[in-house]
Image (cartoon, rainbow, N blue to C red; front, side):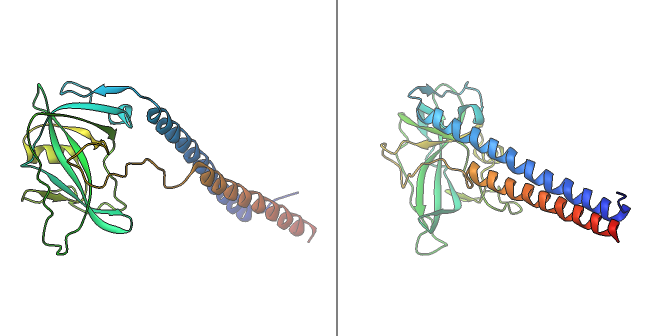
Amino acid sequence: MPFKLLPTAAYLLVMLILLALGNWQLNRAEEKRQFIGLQERQANNDEVIGLSASSPDDAQGFRYKKVRLTGYYDVAHQFLLDNQIYAGKAGYCVLTPFVLEGGQKAVLVNRGWLPLPAKRTELPYIGIANTQTNITGRINHFPSVGIKLANAEIPTENWPSTVQLVDSPVLAKKLGYPLFGFQVELDTQLPDGYTRDWHANTLMPPEQHTAYAMQWFGLALTLTLLFIVYSIKNYND
């Protein structure tokens, strides 16, 4: 049965696109399964690692691990991560540099979420003691943003400094000392923190990606059947 060139080319092109989209969704499903598996393994691991200035800067390898820190908060130089939503309300995440004992390197400690003050031009009071202390928490990536605006990583000049997006090298330059490329989420049982509802989730579960993949493959099958019917009809004509 001969096939016409233009309809066949169009069919093959659309088929390739549909199959590629289906495979992409299957790959995303597998990535999410691995991600969830990592969350569960780290959450069920009772080991507490000690973070020091000489520790490797491995955000992915350390993610969700429990950590113990010794040092002091640089209370004079804190950051307010803007546009953070909790329980439907806008506010800030308070990121305080914690200078580690025995070195000039720090990690940003996320001390939790604060609602916006009544006036947007006002900044909340986030002062704490800067004495030598021990804290515990969980290593995680910095909070993400939906759309990255131009210069969102540039902090304001004042202290505490507000910023729309965390870029460790940029903030380290403002501070004048190096920072790790991840945050420590302060343990919910410790003082000097605010609302801390630490949880790890994925915006879309693996099953939903798989369902989308089946939809793309279903469309590919439907297209194939329609193309066969079309070809037979034209052949008989």
